[in-house]
Length: 85
Image (tube, rainbow, N blue to C red; front, side):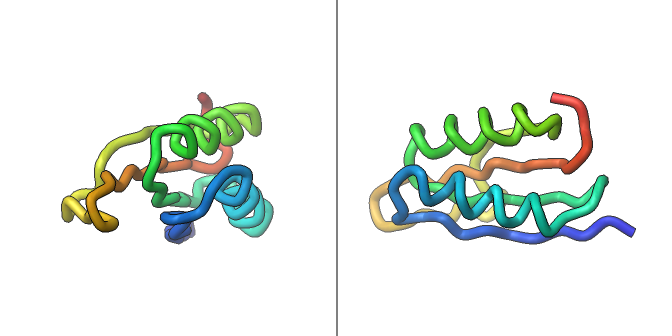
């Protein structure tokens, strides 16, 4: 049974969002979904690149609820563990 977890990395500068994604990935099994919330494009790109390098499928976008962190956009990096990039 796959699990879904959320990692809130908003307000953190690189490499912290990648480190948090790495920890979540290490604690996950194939088929699990990790949603990493970030608030800047650089973190979104870095987390996506990291997850793809680990063989995960990655989708990026805005959260369904339109969440905002102050005046900054909030991005979601959806990582499917063990999927294809």
